[in-house]
Length: 166
Image (cartoon, rainbow, N blue to C red):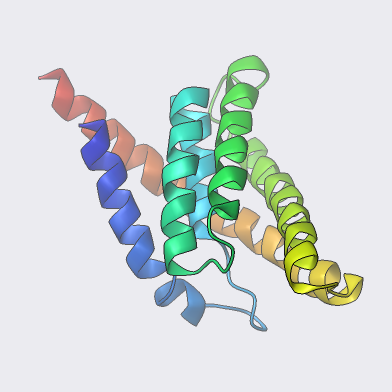
């Protein structure tokens, strides 16, 4: 049943990320729903499922939007694993505000790492363009979009969990 849950969310995000989410972009900056979902999976289901979800959803993101194949898959895998560790060790309950802060920090770290890798592959990208105009606004937008997505993911996870109990 978990595979069905993740498959439905992967298809839903694969449809929404390049269409609706790009439509709600502010000044050309759109949130990364795949990254937010991976962090939520890590928080709600643990580090193993967070890492696997990160690898799979990162690969789907790379296939749809990414320019460097496999980079987002690896970054998302580590982010999902880290979110699972944070939820197990430090934040036992599902506090949406701590998750939003985690999403913001993870988006900053992921953005900086991707910026550095893209700079190695494509040539140097200016600090102002890469960090100030793109990474910081996207991380704030990811934290904002995390709140409604958290309640949606948690509700569907509980719904799937209840159906398997019968």
